[in-house]
Image (cartoon, rainbow, N blue to C red; front, side, top):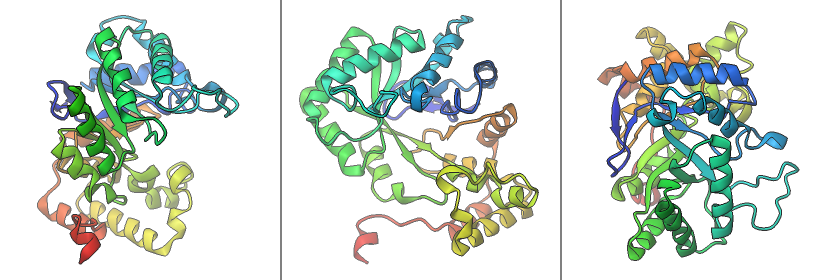
Length: 331
């Protein structure tokens, strides 16, 4: 496993992040524990979750699964850089009681204590804002975070799904307060979705945030979707967000060209998609959310995969990036 600093911090994290969103809804507790053991054995020390994972009536279930794993001991908690998130409505019926969601100081205090109980730990290493809160003043948010840092309940704060200007705004306000500010941004970023390159990633680099891409294979489309479809195993690979994408002739042509290129070079699509992200400026490591040991092993192999200049150039031709701003807006 390879490691890097998380943004401008002194924190060393693996270049692959273990995403846990499937733990509970897709992967049962014992299998989830086995995957976490295997990830730790492979050197993956960066685990990402959120208070809402588990979904529906089971919100919080994923954090509970991590908690029972930590409770087994064996230095599990000491070896893991633990990241979770706050913002979402934790009401099982979809209706939150007032102040039970978003980023008010009250909800942040309430949510962090609930996460700590579920995770069976005394601190969270990276506490992330799952979404922009347009109603709560940034100074209030930083006041709440500063208190949690002083209490030792969290060490660092990060953002998720923030725009470039929101990253700048949040860290400028933090600097005025003498607060440390955001140290990471978790955003959607992959070969098919490169919009983050315009402003989000440049802002993250300017302010010293590590970029943690989620959906690195775009809902399975970059994991060999057409090949799996042909072989009769494509139902899962094209579900969710990208379920109907292959019906678009342009998208299908891109994915076919992608798979043909990688087949020519003897590369696995899923591994190549992750390896490409590891070549991108500002990227700390992509989030891989395995449901099986095979998927985890494939993601770990991607960290060691070196893509040739020929392959990288061909990937840019298939999936051209947006180019920098403001040029992309102006000419």
